[in-house]
Amino acid sequence: MANSYGYRLYKFEIYKGNARKPHPMYIENDKGVDWWYREHLEVAAQPFVDRAVHGMPPLLNGNDRSQDLDEVPVFQLVSVALRGTNLYGTIRHGRPGGYDLALPKPSLGGEATPIDISDHSPTREYRFVVYFPTVGDEAVLAVEAVSGACPVRYLTNWARRWSQLHGEDHPVDGASGPWFKPTAHALGDPRQMTQFIEKSTLLEVVLVAGGRGRSRLRRDEAFRVTSTLDVQGKESALRKLEGAIVAKKSDEEMAAELAAMLGREVADIDLDDGWIVLDTEYGRQQVSPSRIPDVFTYPIAEQRPSDPTFHREIAAKAATLASHQLNSTFDFTNTDE
Image 1 (cartoon, rainbow, N blue to C red):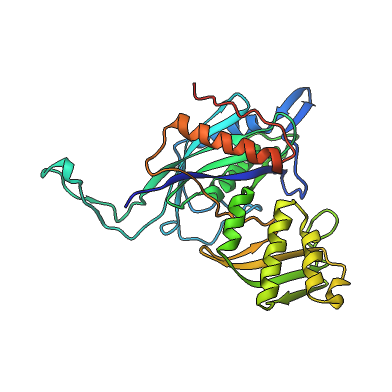
Image 2 (tube, rainbow, N blue to C red):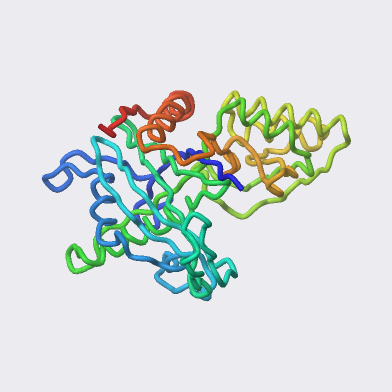
């Protein structure tokens, strides 16, 4: 069966330690020198090149996760390097598949023998690029997708762990140095989002009062309204969802529009969050302007593209989406040569 090669794009931000607001990617003259997160990430990641790890890293507080390391996916950083303002790298990812023997290809001839892989996890390489802004604090992360698989969660979680360990190895005033947690939220173009919505079935509308404060932090909900709607209402709600995403409205603004469909009693409520639950080909998805599903793969080819082709493709699409969806300025120059 042929593989399909493509990529997924994400808005990439960082948080210092357990802070709840994004941290700048660049600080001018921090303690006498300019500080760049891109340089911090490269330095923090380098010691872990070619080191295989199993499962997710420890929790933010350092506690180990409850996971059987023989049964969870394996992850390995293969390479990482800054080129200009952007960070290029390759990771390896796979999982135990329950296989026991790998049989040789016919082209290897009759002398080739099967290989026992019962205690091994088959893996493949995935390329990634972080396009750091020349102005602004929202970066773009591009991660290769192969036949629908895209290990972005492993990349961002281990990037956080590398930063934590770097801080421990470089104490400041007798305490661990600062560390940074990256987040990745999917970027999807309007046409792709429209096709996704059209192929989905609305299950319910969820509206929340007291769900977020002015800073967008979660707080206790005052109450929640859930409605399954009739057929006409579902069609109208999907149009409002599509329009809100295209117009880059907030979740609160979309919630107010959806509330108006449910009657005056709901419309008069001071709502501040809302989303639509869709039944999609990828399963149940919560969707709103800030909840773009992590399912949008931009295809390239059925054969693994060369590095120049891969980087050229993602740079072109990233430039288009970033110009409309992010508050940053970028240099998407291809640096393969």
